[in-house]
Amino acid sequence: MSVALLATLALLPQDPQVAPRPDPAPVYRIEDVVVEGRRLDEAAELYVDQVVAPARGRGPARWDEGVCVGVPNFNTEVAQYIADRVTDLARELGLRGHEPPCNPSILIIGAADGADFARELIAQRPRLFIVGGAGMDRGRAGLDAFSSGERAVRWWHVSVPVDDQTGDIAVRLPGDYSLTYTSQNPRGSTEENFAPQTRRNYASRLREPWRDVMKRSFVIIDADLTAGVTLRQLADYVAFVALAQVDPEADLSRFDSVLNTFRNGATAEGLSAWDTAYLEGLYSLQPGYVGDNAQTSALSRSILAAYRAGAEPEPPVTDAP
Image 1 (cartoon, rainbow, N blue to C red):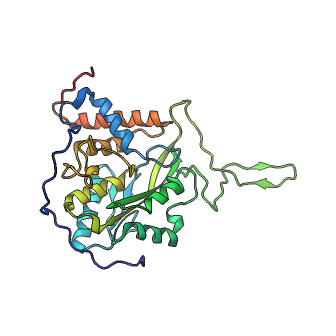
Image 2 (image 1 turned 30 degrees about the vertical axis):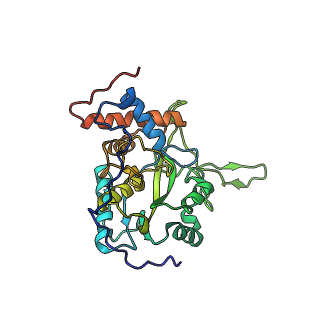
Image 3 (image 1 turned 120 degrees about the horizontal axis):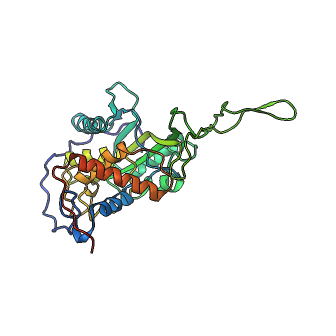
């Protein structure tokens, strides 16, 4: 199958008639008393632990300044709806939403066969997916998962560690070298091929002097697998996975979340309070936490702060037994 633009896809209905679904199991709703005796902070950590999926060895990345959204292979009305939703959400998170013409940093593509399309796109432009710098993606195993299996929506992110003070890239890219540090060898020649140098202005075992910045998001939608999903649900789902590094295997069946859209018993009509709090927490999080536990705890605290800042009154929470 060619990677050239596919034939225009049919307009997705916004309110399709769907067969009744069985009653879902009880889920955690952030607005309610926490189910099964869990405290709100414990539930937040559980949510984060399922969702967050940064590049190997790195912390959760986010877009730094602005995004440009491209949505090829869809009916014009559908493409505009999805692009507007992603851009509007980005602006709500404090980012700039660039208007066309611009070079898309978020590319949302419709396909008749998502896995086949992903494989061909990777074969033609492999460096778009595996750039070669440390801590920029989820590796070959992650890329194989991205380009295989049957999924209504699949996604791939490329991020980069940057100096928290200067914004300079903190890893060496293929073909690049750094002039930050030079030394004279005994023969008098200059050695220049050193990795970028980052200065630490503080001493901490829990923080590092870098932050992780999103550079590209690829989202592929398999149109044949979106039956029974409203356009609002699809656009919110895509917006979430385009703006955050989400684990494709995340099990949020016990949470009210748009990420359950393609699961039986899904109830969220769009971004839930959990989802909104997660994104707001991610984009307000002070970056640079070292280690998975520190990252999860910090992001969980940011989620709670983001939720409580907009909650009036704060929901009651029961003590764990």
